Length: 233
Image (cartoon, rainbow, N blue to C red; front, top):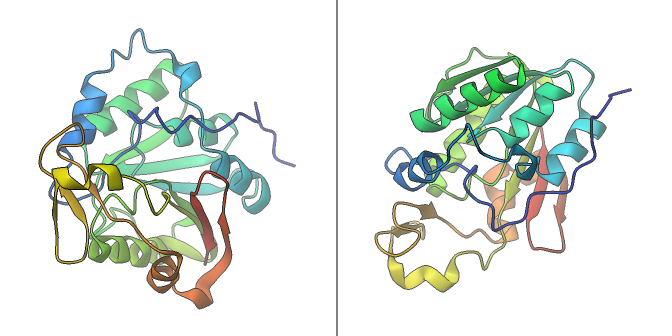
């Protein structure tokens, strides 16, 4: 039985400073957001794990399992997992994010291993992790890089390992489309406005199934706010 310190509700969508882009080209937006945070005075009670992470840990992870948080950002999900006894590793493209999460873990006396890395080649050996999560990050990159990330997740997972992936609603960021250059695969590269420095690609359900591999999907759920929650092998 896994002990959970709290069944916390997911963080409101408006609280975005601890989410992280993984583009090999453009981490500026997310690094800038974290640089605006004073870690000494930040109210970490507002930085709660996403609901799907809590559910995945309870239903699909054994006590003490080794878990990878791909695109760990500022660490709200990794923090929760470490608090509940999991062996946590994470990487992010942004050195700012990695420094932030290391300081966060030090402040709370948590143990975790965090490094700078990218989707193209995860900085870990094959068959290393029992589980992997990539939350609200795959659609903040190009489709090609998202495909690389999924392939790398499978490489570093043990043969019986499972991954949790989440994708934002189809309509996410569409109201800011005029602020973006549209890349060849449909990814929006925001070059002006409040989202400047961010990439976002909107995925249909069928595109997600094609990206992940429909035969590798254990469950595919769309929650009321439009997020798509996928568990895959």
